[in-house]
Amino acid sequence: MSEWRNWSGLESATPVVVEEPRDTAEIVALVEKARANGTTVKMAGTGHSFTSIAAPEHTLLSPTALTGIVAVDRDAMTVTALAGTPLKVLNAGLERLGLSLHNMGDIAEQTLAGAISTGTHGTGGVAAGLASQVAGLELVTGTGEVLRATPTENPDVLDVARVGLGALGILTTVTFRVEPLFLLEAHEQPMGWDEALASFDEMVAGSHHVDMYWFPHTDRMLTKRNDRLDADPGEARPLPRWRSWLDDDFLSNTFFGALCRATNRVPAAIPRVNQVSSRVLSARTYSDVAHRVFTARRDVVFREMEYALPREAGLDALREVRRAVEASPWRISFPVEIRVAPAEDVPLSTAYGRDSLYLAFHTHRDADHTAYFAGVEAIMRDADGRPHWGKVHTRTAADLAPAYPRFADFLALRDRLDPDRVFANGHLRKVLGD
Image 1: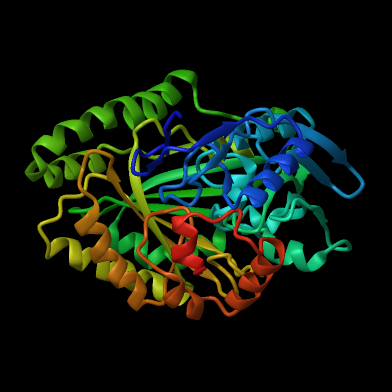
Image 2: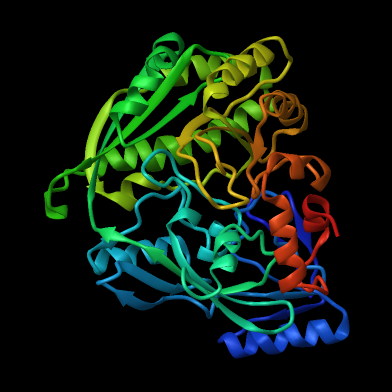
């Protein structure tokens, strides 16, 4: 059979069977067949997880036929979509309806199922994570049951399954709480390291969404503040087309990709290149409908590790990372991303029970990430960090369980919904046990 490979190229698998179910009934039949045969089944999305969390061991299901918005409730302000719908398709559909998600991450290629299952999040806002915006879901359990979970129907399942890791069932629909379509005004500004860290708390308090990028081997930051506007979406003032192409298409993708390939061959040049690159950045301000400001193209393929830290420990951990980079032989061409999130009530959310600061570390796909990620992961663990479920980490069930107060509740629901481990694979055995 054809090989499954994730977007970063870091993980691959060769399924025995590949199917493209067209509806829930076909998913049920395939799950029941796998259970009867003692095999496993995984619904894989677009492969944007950097781990093998979605890797199939026997049967691979493709969600390509399971896309689209299926219900809109303007009284409840909810929208239901098939779980194989890519976020970018949902965003476009919501815009046509005059609606929007409250918050989202910075890419929109993932399927809804993959994004919420791994805890995809943005920064700031009332809710940073996609899972906290979920008002209902439907899934096929490991016994072939079609189970609907809402605040009034199986609320215990909704409570836990909003970040389900693909271990509880195959999601078929997801219902999101939505808002009227709104504008965001983006303020992007380069800053020095000291100024950015000294003003970080003030920026977070004064703006709806704040994101920063530190360029390793330099003292330079790029800050991004996104603020909601009390204006009609028709009053958007996006970047001129030429500026958008130059900054976001050519410089951030085409030119940056070529630069990474060149510095991969001469890593010693990376510090100097970062110094030059970070100093040619210029401030810019623009406004657009929310999803166009939150998300961006990411054509340059990379590997990523991200950790959620207690908010009060985050900046000190970032300072420790800088000390480690400067004392090491690592040469890092990608910026470190800094975001924040309010506490969430989803049991396996990385922001469960605590305001959080996220630190994300990247390398180009052709650069060796292992030493860098191992070094920063040690710092993240010392700061009581929790790894993003869809990004590179080395944690196991033994040390993840103490990090999540309701880890046992998740395992108990897994035992109930998938007693025969129809949805298991090697990665889930590592992070959840068996």
